[in-house]
Each structure stands twice: as structure tokens, then as C-alpha cells.
Image 1 (cartoon, helix red, strand yellow):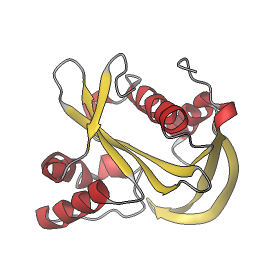
Image 2 (tube, rainbow, N blue to C red):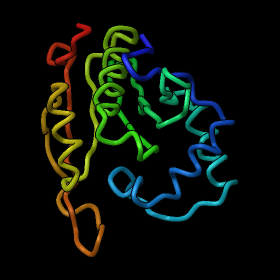
Image 3 (cartoon, rainbow, N blue to C red):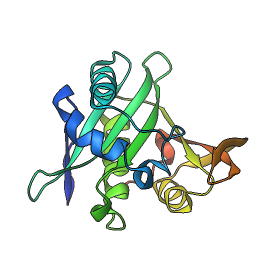
Image 4 (cartoon, rainbow, N blue to C red):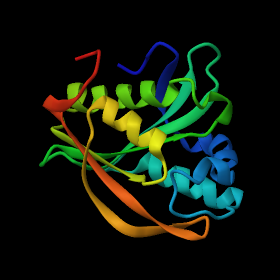
Length: 178
């Protein structure tokens, strides 16, 4: 359930703030995933990681390599709604040396499989910046469909960009583990 070919998940804990702090303060990492580019103090990151790792309506996991258990990113299901069986997906691959190696696809596939098979969710959603074509292609490969967009909702690199809203229903997921 929490292990793939190259990676595995483990529960995100407050002690993970140190790894996350490095990624959170790297603009090249957060440029494509966070609407807020800023420099954060260690204390601010500790508070943030504690908040997301202990939230009652979220499940957050550290992504580690299977080879050496090195932390390389974070995945989360946020805004968990068990009545309507839905959640929003979030992913950050913080270790830039792991970019372009299929880690994002494997991590999202594991997260989607967990959400549908273990949590019995019916619907997943996510938000992605319109300039992040690699992520959009990855999500579409898993089966996510564009459901809308927030026009010019993000100001980045001197211009406005749309935020694309995507959704996936359980019976639409394109997973090898189905």
C-alpha cells in the first residue's frame, strides 16, 4: 500500500521539519507548487509541519527512497471529507536530484491507490499552475480531468497565470494496481 518500485511513504512527523525546511526555502522547488514564495524561519516551518502532520482532516506522508530511506518529498490528502468521500491531493518532490525520474508519477499513483482502495474515497481533486505542463501531463496520465480554471489567479515571474482545477473519480483512475 505505501511502497512502490522506487519509493515508500511513511507518516509525516514534526521531526521532518528539518528536511521540509530546506525544500520550502528553495524557490526552484516551490515555484511550481506553492502560491506563496517566501523565506521561512525554522520555527515557522516547524509550526507548519506540526500543523499538517497532526491535522484531523488531512493525511500527510514523507516520500522516501526505498534504497536508502532518504526523504525526497511529501504527499498529502487534505480537506478530507468522509461524508462526501473526497479529498484534495498535494505533492512536492523537494529533492531536485530526483526530478525527471518518475518519482512524481509513482508517488501520485500510490496516493491515489491509497485514497480509493483503503480510504474508500470516491473523488480526488487538485490544483496545478498552468505553466507546470509536466505536472498536468502526469495527472492526466493517472486519469485526472480538467474541471475548470481560476483565471490569472497566480502572479509568478512577472506575469499572471491560471490555476487549473483537476478532478478524478474512482472509476476513472488509470492505475496498474487497480
